[in-house]
Length: 176
Image (cartoon, rainbow, N blue to C red; front, side, top):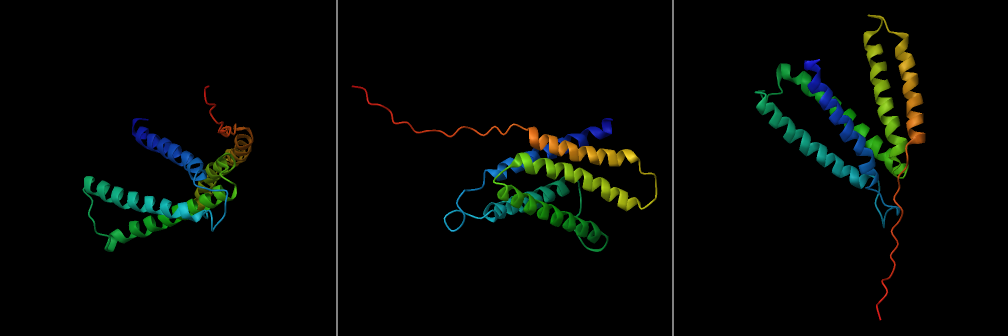
């Protein structure tokens, strides 16, 4: 279990960061469409800038501290290719999530359970496909996926919306 503590902590960190991504991007919308307001893709540009800056700077710093080379030629091309594909999938996911949040009017309570429940299920289905008959697949996997769907519905329907009441500006009365 000791060897699993670090990956579990980083997985929890990812869940926390991505769990707050939906509500945060929900704050980046306006009720007025362009030209007075803005499209969902104006904040998406800055999502991309943040990804780019953090991925490049963080990656280079981590590579330096791990004693890695900065070469991507020859045998180093394979991780570069798969890293690019992973980044592309992540960026497409962020684009889909941003669009879902904006078209649902910032409804993170609907969108985020679908995203995370769906992601777990897609990962499991990919693993089944990758094995292609090289092992036994427990029927409990399918039960688990069905429970994820039920869980998504239950979470989406029962999470309190917690919208704050709008502030009213009441004029202060002058004292006599």
